[in-house]
Every structure is written in C-alpha cells, then in structure tokens.
Length: 454
Ligand code: ATP
Ligand code: MG
Image 1: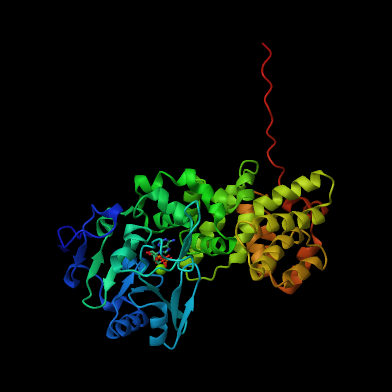
Image 2 (image 1 turned 90 degrees about the horizontal axis):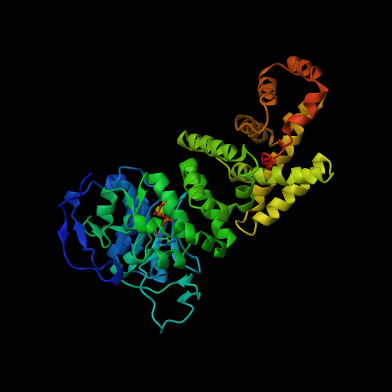
C-alpha cells in the first residue's frame, strides 16, 4: 500500500502539537475505499446528515481497517451536527453517555455511533461541558468544535482519518496516512499529557498494536510502564468493557503478552499477576485460554465473558484456596471463601456483572466435582447446565499443566459412550482419583539455598 506522493497538501492544520504535520486530502481515485465496502446503514446516516447541511465523515477504526484491507468491526461517524440535531434527524437515535455524549443510531442489530466534533475547552466553559481533574484526567469532554480540532483530540494518528461523504475523499490532519504506511501507532500530541487525560489509551495502544500488527512509536511507548498505575483511576465499569475488547475480539493472546510486558495486566488483575510468580502453570493457563478464544472467534463460534473471567481469576483463586487449606480449612469451604474474596477484590478494578460472575463461580465449583465420578455423581454432574464449560475448563487446566491429564479424557469418553457403558465407567474409579488431582498443585516454595559453608 502506498499513499506516497498522492494527495494535495493544503495548509498547516490547527493545533500546536502537530503543527509540523501537513493537512492532506486523498481524492477518491487515490485510495481504495469504495462505498461497496461500507455499511449501508452508515452511508444512510452520512447522506442524511449531509443533506441536512451538516459535515459528515466516517472516522476511526472503520477508515483505518478499510485502508488496511481488513473488514471493519463497526462504523463511527463524526459530524458538525450536535447530538440534539442528530436526534431530530433520526427516529431511531438515542443520546448516550455523560462524560462523552454521543448518539447511537440503531438499525436492527447494527448501531452507528455518531459523534459531534470535539473542540478545545477554554476557561469560559463551565464544568457541565468540559471538566478535568487536577491530575489531568478528562472527566467530561462535551465542547463542540471543528473537524481539525476534533482530529487532534483523537487518540492515535491512524484513528484520525476522515472519509468525507461529500466527495469520498480522505482527510488526514495528523499524519495518519504516513503512519499507516509505516505500520506505526503514534499518539497525537504529547503522550504524557494524553495518557494522563485518559489512561485507557495505554490499553488501546497495546490492543491496536496486537490487532494491526503495528509497532508502537518510541515516544508513544516510552511512558507506558511508568504511567501504568494511572489505570487505577478508571471506573471499574469502563475497565470491564475494555477488558472484553482486549481479550474477546480475536487477538487476545498477543494483547495479553503486550499488557503483561508493560505492567498493564497487573493494573487490571493484580491478584492474578501476583500468582504468576508462585504458580508455574498460571501464565500458561491464561495464554492457552486466550489462544482457544482467538481460534473460536476466527471460526465464528460464541465466546463468553464468564469463561474468560473464570480463567483470568483462577490462579488467584487457587493461590488463596491453598493458603486457606494450609490454615486448616477443608477444600470445599476453602474454595468458596477464596472465590468470594478474589471476586470482591477484583470488583475494585473491573466490574463483573452478575450474569457473568454467577456462571463463572459455577465453572469453578464444578472443578471440585468433576473428579468425583463414582456411582450417580458423574450423571448428576453431567446434567449441570454449566457442565460443558466446566469440562472445557478442566481440559484447559490439564493442558496448562496445572493438573495431570486423565480426568479430562475420562469425561471425554463418558460423553461419547452408550448409557450402559457410562454406568460401567462409573464403577471403575479408584478412590484416590476421586479427590487429589483438581486441587491446586502446591505453590512453588521459594526455598532459600543454603550458602556453602566456607
Ligand atoms: P475498533 O472499533 O476497531 O476497536 P476504533 O478505532 O474504531 O477501533 P472505537 O473505540 O470504536 O475504536 O473509537 C472510535 C474512534 O474514536 C477511535 O478511532 C478514535 O478516533 C476515537 N477514540 C476512541 N476512544 C478514544 C480515547 N480514549 N481517546 C481519544 N480518542 C478516542
Ligand atoms: Mg470503532
């Protein structure tokens, strides 16, 4: 792909931090985006806004991904119309968000996100429109502006490319086309300031680098490790949504490795991160869960946050359960208590809606039941609504080396054979097999080596 030499260089854009960048327009015949590649509903929105006299562009991931030859996940529109003006144009529109007001225009299952151009707030604006904490965190950003102001308030240059419905050209205010060509993720403006405004941009950097297979430009990368802890300021509900984007959109394992490398994973899942140093299987378990998830997504199979969270928090649960068992508590209550504690501490970082935390706990509880297969037990466990997920989870634990293989195979076979064979299978189980193998392998003791006597 080359946009080199193409496009008109018109004028220097507004915005001090990027004044070295030149505004660039790629006319329709110099880029590969055709209307056939775009969502019909997004086009409808653009045309109607434009007809009503407003500026209307596609922006963000849909332009970026289309230029890269990938299929966009969703379509975002940027416009000069205010949210109220957008709403009067579409019956199916709803204004959402307080921190960042946008309009959702719904067409059946597809939602087109329509965002009014953001401008730079000044002292005269009151807190209802724009508001920043003393540390620089953007608490509200609802000051309207022009497209060039909007461009420099976006996160990465490759996310600030605008497709103009008026003449099908692409507008680039921040050097995004160059960066796209060089496969570089570059924050617009001063990275330090931009991460402080919104620390979630650090997570987005890692996610896009993994998804697009881009490098993170040096200045954009530099502050991440040091600023990672800023994520602790972000409301848990927003981080929950972000975690789903990080791990359930097809590039989970690469994203996890990136997050781990930059110390960001520890800000999302601190207890799991702690468990990595004492449980040798823990990191493998999460990687394997994400590898499986990525494959399922590639094959259009459903994935659930409950299973993802079950894996992400399991090392913390096992570590805590083991501690409680060492204090003398029997395995089952130790597990229940450990689960509860881990969940309640996790909620301070990312929320977990009940519709996911309940099945997650079922998956965990079933781990204690799956080894117990004698008599009727196997049949009862097989009937549990969460059996299939729990069985998959058991296989995951075996493949990560947390527990020795064996019980997983038994269950695989159990599901395949006739009723009579099933009964037969439940008769031949050693008592020893009924218990041990699903409890946590003892954490590695950090044994201090004795110094050789001199
Ligand atoms: P994808 O939808 O593929 O995950 P995207 O780039 O479209 O990627 P969205 O979250 O849909 O990401 O956001 C749309 C656009 O809004 C982004 O491309 C970017 O221009 C802008 N944006 C989103 N989040 C932020 C943020 N935290 N700070 C600044 N700009 C943002
Ligand atoms: Mg998007």
